[in-house]
Structure formats: C-alpha cells, structure tokens
Image 1: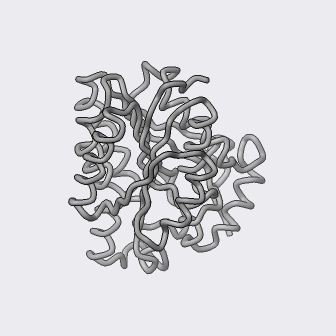
Image 2: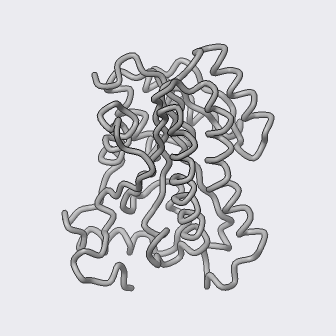
Image 3: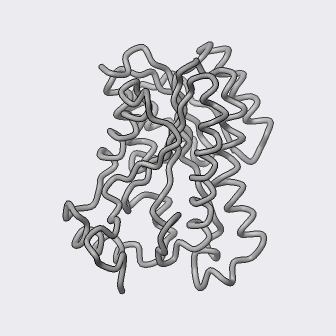
Length: 259
C-alpha cells in the first residue's frame, strides 16, 4: 500500500479506457484517496461510473478554459480535503481539422486552441492548485513521442506536447522551492478516446507492436503503474523529467512508422 494515506486530484478521466483512469486505478489499489473531475454534464455520467468503480468520494466540474471553475475546484478541495498530495493533468485537445493534412496548413485559431487546452491548462491548473498541495507533493502530466519525433497525423499536437515538456522543466524549478516534484509520462500508442481522432491510428498500433523492443503495445495498466510510481515517494528524487514507457522509440535503427 505505497499510497496509503495519500490524497490526490486526477484531471482528465474520460472513461475506463483513458490513461488517467489507469493511473487513478493503480493509485487506489495502493491505498490512495482519489478526487476526479468532469468537463461537462454530457461527460459527467461516464466519470460517475468510474467514480463508483474506484469508490471515489467526490467528483467536481472542471472545464480548464473557465477560470471560475478552476477557482471553485480549489475551494472545494480545500473545504473537503484540506490539502492533497498529488495532482495528475491528463488534458489535451486540438480541432480535428488540425490533425488532418499537412502541418503547414494549421490555422492560427487551431494552434491557439491546442496550446491553451493542452499546455497552458497545466500551468493554470498547477498555479491554482499549488496552495492546497502539501510540501513534497508530486505532479504528473501526460505527453507523447510526437513532441520530439514526426508522427503521422499528430501535427499541431506534437508542437503542443513539446511546449508541455518545456513547461514541465520550468515548473520543476518553481515548485522545487517547496519540494514539489513535476514529471511528464510519455506512453506508447494506446487506443483511447483521444487517440480516435488521429488518422491511421490502427496502423500505428500494428507497426509499434511489431517493431517496439518488447514486441507489444503498452496497456493502460502499464502506464498506470508508472504514473503511480511518479506520484509516490518511490520517486522522491525525480523531477523535471520525461519518462518513456515502451513508446516505440527508434532504438532499433528502424523508421518510426511507415504506411
């Protein structure tokens, strides 16, 4: 029970196939008390289903593009829990048209939306929640190999993930003054709700399974265990890092992906 007595907020659980769900489940399995959020009323029933399964006491509304909801979330946590020990940011979005065609045709609006929701939301969330984080707390966000390599159809999200990773390094210095750690988790391709918007994703899965070092795709459970490690005291000396989980990294001298 590595997380016994720990309390934490996990933002971005969409259903039981999301990476954030995998992290939440592993934290609960290790004794943590988890708090979840839902983006809107349409998605609320899905999160309620997960909350019931994981015996989560409270779920709160949170649309990261609405400052008033961020403020209300912080106040609710402070009222109901006092302070918490960890925070997971699992939020990313880009308009579907920005994931098709050539990157050079990305519109300014699509670029700004991707950066606001996928990158700035981490900064905004951490700044808002930081007062209710205990000293020595841990923060984890989710990134992807497209931040440093070309991934077909990933386009503007690759640029957003690169900015997210840079943000992790800068936040690590600011948060380190209180002993708070922040790291990013980069998983290999997983068939989640978010991944359904990426063209040819099934082909990427097939290629990765055939050519990755372990000859398999990672699972939500694999990522969940790594996330739990980064949130626990087992990683007490680790901050500002990008952790890869069998992401099909090009260590075998092969192209990352070919159609």
